[in-house]
Amino acid sequence: MSYNKTYIIMLGIKNVEDPSKVLGFAIIVYIIPSNFCFGSYLAIEPEYMNKGLGSIFVNEVKEYFIELAKKFDAEKPIGFFYEIDKHDLSRYNNQDREQIFARYRFYNRLNQKKIDVPYFQPALRPWLPKVPMYLMFGPFEERKYFSKEEILRIYTNIYTVLYHKSEKSLKKLFRRLNVVDLPNRIDLISLDSIVQLKKYTIDIFRISD
Image 1 (spheres, helix red, strand yellow):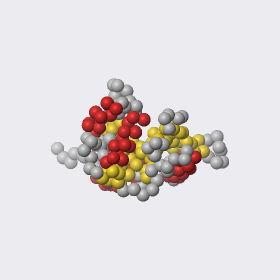
Image 2: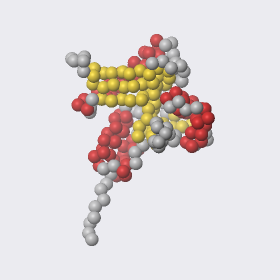
Image 3: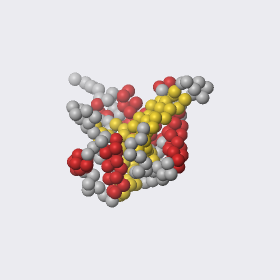
Image 4: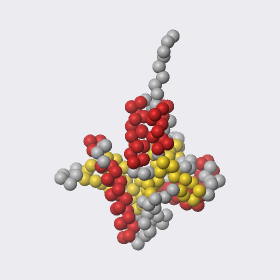
């Protein structure tokens, strides 16, 4: 689908031996004027997880958009942005926490970085709350930081193109996120800091009366 030089594209990965079988798919929003992609969804069939297929798929999707940019005579995209849940780990049991860490480890292996700026997903329905998230970035080329101007432009595009926020509501949202007074340099943070939390996963038990 095309929307003001923004394209919503669904890509699938199939079994070469059985082309009728889809092993996974991704939904990507390609925002050409701002020169980046936004990953709305990525899924691999459960039976094919933990076999390296996810990493291969992500790399293939990256190459797909590099070639697509050439067809549009556009600049090479700087990379993918996407959201991952910012979990309150104290609310989960050990099994659920392990699944959360597994996702973090997957993105960490792919050299995905967390943007060190507050972010949340707007309420998708009027009666639902906004959801705190990590905004992640998968660079196509090595990058260590964004400037304040780049972050404000990226946030503006994400919230207006994906979530259809008006200019008025965007200003209010920016004040709530406190992104107006950002430093001039915003570092990209490794997910190592999150993954390492697993070392401190504990159970509390009663020793004596």
